[in-house]
Length: 241
Image (cartoon, rainbow, N blue to C red; front, side, top):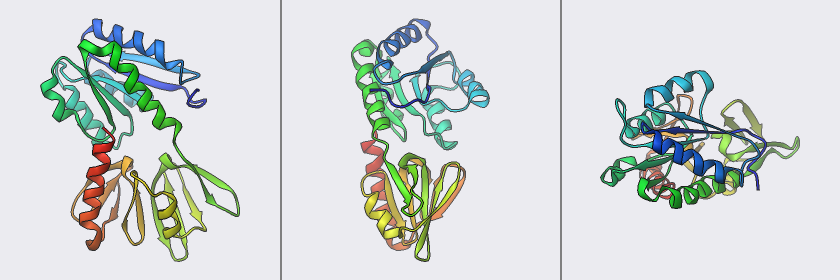
């Protein structure tokens, strides 16, 4: 089943052509199972990939080598996270000792290059399963306005209404913050304050009293929920690996 009509953008970043060719071959064999249309682009360095982002925008999936000249894969992952990226990342490497540093937000898996052909289809299926399960939500029951859960950055209570802040626009909803909390119950969304629900998949970082989100947005964490917010975000990161 195809993910949707969106052209799925895949990037491969590895300094060794033998591996970019092999990764591309596996992806071409597998992507047709999930996508009606897709593009695959290859890059030899992190800097080349970052330059591409400036022109073409974010990829949907990045298959990323850990060890590369200049900025390595871990550094590129951290740079993307700091910028609020939501691109899924699959690491590939011959250096399994680097695995602990490769974990983090948006990282789907870590593959030893010796088993690339066997493992890459498994992690690709995991990425695509997440894409297909992206929940569609009715924002306003009167108007029937619908948004995808993955597009919601955060929700803010506004008296008896709520404002849904998405990546590209805002929606006024006639649902209460408590109704949204119940509807979005699970791993990804969390109510960090009596007036705010945040999307953990779009979090850049936490500190003791704020959540920093996609688009240089910050929302408060209540003192009462500080510890629970940190624990739930840690759980989210572990489960997203």
